[in-house]
Image 1 (tube, rainbow over the protein chains, first blue to last red):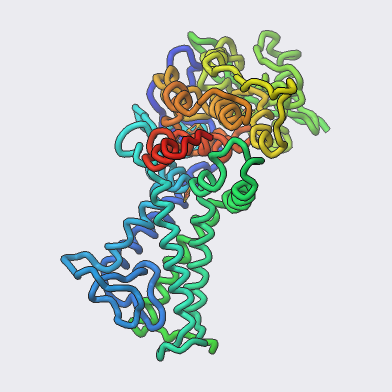
Image 2 (image 1 turned 120 degrees about the vertical axis):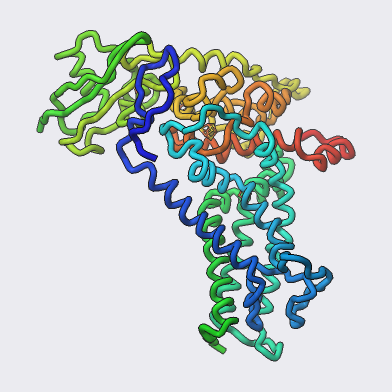
Length: 266
Length: 250
Ligand code: SF4
Ligand code: SF4
Ligand code: FES
Ligand code: FES
């Protein structure tokens, strides 16, 4: 990604400037950081979802495995274990397509990965490396338009994560009144995931954005106003919830495999 | 306290051109447009540069300063190191006429394609009534000074001339949005925004928002809401079903 790379000859009629960009600042830092963090998460997440072990350290269930629906899931959990274990499909692989699809079609992540992985554009006023460009008008990218459906599923997942955060207040015997570092991780994860989900652009549209007469729908207008406030920080919620879900999984994994013991407050 | 500023200005026309180095005197508190005017007055009498208000309100003086699309009258020299050479070039996306002046008529052609405001009939007492909250959202888009910086930066046409016929650009997406969200307007602009303005070509990478001198949240408040409205119409069977059953076309 050198600033010196030249693109094809300038379009006829335009000023003949061959440099890909005249920017002198380090415009490549942004896409680089995105690529590293996002790439790191994908690698870690794939590994964690495939190992099929150490995702449960009573009373904590890794958020990457919630809800746990296959017959190999720990019996202490409340959810119905109605799916058979099959092939390499770990309990995580059954459910991850939903949150994954939600993030993949998220308006913010789209910006992030189009810039960082596809260079389209890598940064503003920096030439992109592709000869042709059709944006989101063709398959597969036209599918980004189904984002709202992933949002509906994401609401269910937010509820499940809240449930598991609440269950993390029980001790090994299943009695209420426990709290450890794992509880904190799961609570942080549930809160961030819920706020990230509610700050979604599709949520903003559904609550009130599609209306033209706010005054006729005072409740929806109020909801839209609140969602708009969260939406202003959508990027921050997206990153925070991504990092915390990985950290929560990592912590539970380390407790489960005995590397560390959970620090309990009560 | 004056100092010598190293300026590298693109000079030429559609046929040929190149960056020329100049040393121009600069004063404390000046903006890029000031030194371009001094350059014109002292060394390059035929330098073409478009400007008007020198107050960031007319949108005429758009150019690229060190590769950043900017209003030159609002780009302070104090933002740069005094020893640094500052490059100044014309908007890259539009045909150049001479030096820093480009032909921005692409934008006026796209403006003509937007159907005019078409209000519903007046109330029986001969007036229109709107609540403040109903018109508030569109007000942000009316701050646009038509500087074309967003249009110039958008990679859809900056890097792909061939997309120009099919793509109206961010400035017009907020125009379509403003009208589509207007409580009195009767046109349905969702299909137009998709078919005629080509909103599907936008991949919401937000460069328009980054360069807008008016700080309009073009992507978050204009383009994404319009993409969602287009999705209502085109990609969402549930919304379509709902609109048939409840016969509500908000
Ligand atoms: S967000 Fe869309 S319209 Fe704005 S610059 Fe990017 S591609 Fe162009
Ligand atoms: S939207 Fe902003 S950047 Fe685009 S033309 Fe208007 S003022 Fe300029
Ligand atoms: S989750 Fe990011 S826009 Fe919906
Ligand atoms: S001269 Fe009017 S905006 Fe710069």
